[in-house]
Length: 383
Image (cartoon, rainbow, N blue to C red):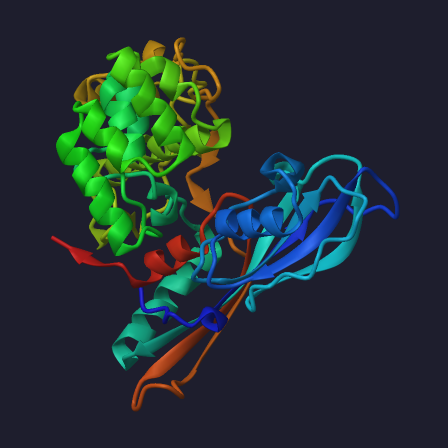
């Protein structure tokens, strides 16, 4: 995908499914940001307004690479203070009688510029845009969902499901995220190498969570579940959702391959995204993994059974009893996502000589990824 780094080439705005009120208990604010993901932006807002993160409601996570407009609520009668970050602003949007949440988002509207394209790439993109404009596109969870994935350690959620609680805590403390700078990455690498030597680990601790965890392990070695219960529910829930998304994507990959049709491929963090130009023969939706799942057809149920066996898990393990602040809940996700109000055009690229750019505008229902639409367009042939 050739979306350049400048956020103005990728603009996303949430469309609310409700109207704001003139009075209420939660102040509705329009957050405009770039260069920060939603979590980091909310932490700055909370800090500058002396609020708890629990007092801030939001609907969706937007990554730092987009110029994003989204809605949040704060449980405060006072107007928010002006924000110090130059690429972060808040505007009054009314009041709600409840916190902002994902269920209040009707859709997201996107304006995207894809640059540095050859005439052949433009030609192929227009063919695919015509197809997905009529049929929709394969609705994989995109790489943004897999921030919690670790190439060495896998998924924290999988370790919890398999009752590898030592490994789960090790993952939580030593996993280096994309936002971690070099010194922090090196510190986490040291912690990984000395794991189990709790005195040495305590010397490397920098957060309250780490200090508490290692102090407990020095006196109660093996008491991992008690520490894991202190992970914030929303953070642990994101790890759970990431693993569910990986499994869901794997089921869709298998269904695409089962058709026997030629596939196009786009590389991904947790497996290639596979696309076919055939859109018939798929179930309308697939459930995400949990202990209780509703299957529309026996074929999907059998695919999940085979996948679970390969992963060394079973459905009952998703009912995690020892760590309860977050849980696995199955949801039905559409196999194909249909863009609304899709418009596109091509122009000479003003930033790259003798190259073209593709300009796109469309809306997607909550939960679908604009970047996946782009990957559908630019996926290449696979033999």
